[in-house]
Image (cartoon, rainbow, N blue to C red; front, top):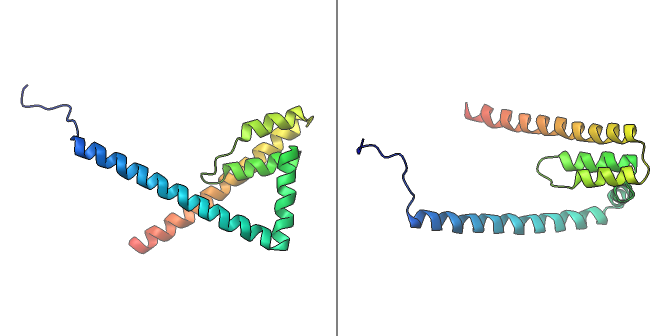
Length: 133
């Protein structure tokens, strides 16, 4: 029984290296997301057609209308964009939206975003695997 080792602990160097790499990668992701969002936010407001549409979507979400619930769940369900969908949903109910239509619009937005996620990643993985094999 003494020949078996069930638990092997990583050396301290490996733990420290993992911590440093994790902090570095999270910092890089944070900086890139700030640069990315600033660039696209400025681009969005520099094009007149896009800024009008963005203002309409932002106002709908801010007022928690039915279309605002749809847009919020559509944006919140795409890829890895974190958003407080539940808070917006309950706020929309408090604003007087019909329960049935609120659920229909919210679930519709979320389902459309899941279809977009599936199609996007399906195409990416197909292109990736077609070049490998």
